[in-house]
Image (cartoon, rainbow, N blue to C red; front, side):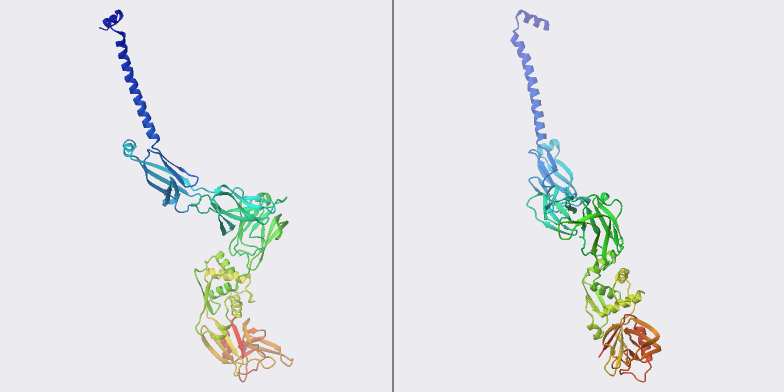
Length: 552
């Protein structure tokens, strides 16, 4: 059949146009199909391209979420911090901002859930989820050890703009307002050598980051050193000492460390390549001392209030003595005073660092009398926070009890022992004793102990020209028997052996027994003479430190 058709075409019996039309029709159908495929693919690509969701970090917010025109609607946004705690977010124009302040460098996971349109959800799924884990930005100081020309402002720069900043001494940073964000701040004109701490936040929704030590030095041909605390300042025994050098520590000092005098418990460490730190341990530097530091080589330091430098190998600080108020608090806690003491808030921690800090910065609290019927003479002598004979007597008794040299002065050894007792919770297990003598005839001596009168006995005080001095005095020597000697008013010498139950309280004046025909009138050469039985009963209550008051 095909052969006849071809033949007919050859002899012209079939028109050529008819044949060509059939083949064109087939090509057109194929082209239309191909075009349809291209259009469909293009539509799919367009839908996919315009239905996307992106979650990325942002230059001002924590993150930014972008939903394209065909992407659908945001159903849920969540953020979680370290440990899985929820971080509340605000969303504005796709920007996600924390509603609570984050710590610079804090790790945060953000989860965004988007619901696609129904017709698209049928093909791609009804929901789309995007997750992003990032850290809150951290602004770093770019130069920690600077050379600053004399008289020029000290300027601190950061590796990115900051929105908040604070600076000052350790533990006392002061916030400074910024206009917008800034890449550097000026500390103003400072002394030629100095060190400060600077803390910053890159974003308004961040808290300040950890402080960074920043030091500056004038131009100098030799290494320059800045100290915190400043040389010559008053410091507490537990104060850490920072030495910052214009050059690396290894270059300035090598491996040798400074030496402190008086010797102080603690250790040196390199905080960074330019800074040495001495951290006291135990009770730290001695109270009431001049702490001297000797360097293994001389360095340049600022010369007083001027801008010049001086070369030295020695720096000093003043450690204040313990406060009288804290001394009284400790003596009261330990049972050496007729008063008790209670803190207004939490008690001082029983650690060397806390106790030694309280010694120079005493906590608030209140004293109360231990006994309801304390003699008026004793009450009249007590003033919290002021040195008085009651406190001196208590120190003497504390020294005697602990087998120390008795001088009534709260020196470093007394403080060391008191602080140790406070940490151990040690308390004297006995009542408070007090003796008062009346020179008005009939003369008497009264022993009061732990809230009650033990006895009142007739006594003899000094004769005219050798009167027993009025006042209150602590017992400083306590012996059961001894020889008493001295000079009579007429210039002759006396020496009386075998005197019993002696308690010296003022020079050669003492409570003691003496055989007399009568008692109750001036007969002695300044002592307080007592009958044997009364002297024997009083003596055990009058150890060193016991107060004796002589009144008219």
